[in-house]
Length: 390
Image (cartoon, rainbow, N blue to C red; front, side, top):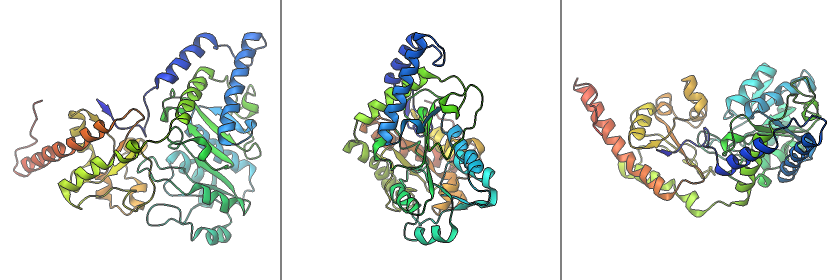
């Protein structure tokens, strides 16, 4: 099987696996214990913290290791609700992951606002200054890149506008990390990362946050400067840092950026202009690995099944939306109808995905279309679904 669902989760990278095994065998001691072996683990943990802080141009005391982006995003809004004045508002884009939008609305209810958006799915920078002056939010949250369609938001420009007005900025950078250097992110007040999205083990992530905004969420032993009690999972942290360092040293190739075009060209040969590429249609910058495609007919789950029969694993929008069986708000914001959103499929490549893999996916597109059309014709004729024999 060729895997095209890296935005949902990435396979464990060999670099991360090797680092995890070494740390599990040699550095398994509790960093809070009083003897020398534990102190060595604590030193390695602090070195990992300092390395992340250097990449992100933030002080080491801002870096808090946690279980992943869901915990980190929840912590941001739960902490903000305690620290900020009870009357203040927060603002976020309507394209945010549910682990951002749900805790924001839970903590701030009707005081959570939607940022002004342009038709291409990006924050409307032209309208934003006046909007910020009119609504005066205390905290703004904007993802670095979208998990469903790959849109890259103008985070740096938004951060500059907010900083000039004394507004806190949070960014869910889950889809950015590992795909682009962390140094290219602006210095926001809070940032969240999730290791399994770029090849680290599941269950480890990072919250980078100004201590003034986060008094803490988990109480107990006082680990992570008292903000997140619980014994640190150093082997998973070591694995995450190892693969991040490997990704930091790599640079985007022309092949990676142009490879999705093979599928777009195949779609154009099949359907002319009777399809959408949500996110790409508006001409905005998108993640190099992500392609969302809306065919003219057939539900996404049928496309997924046909691709899987041909050796390709793809998805339909966000994994969380699939699990909840609800239409994607991201796709609807981009102007797609409910029916079009239900047809939209997503291909998200990884670091080892080749041009040949993308070309194979493009060739499978035509086979899947023919099979789905035959099935639809059989259903229309009252014959039921034709079972293909491999």
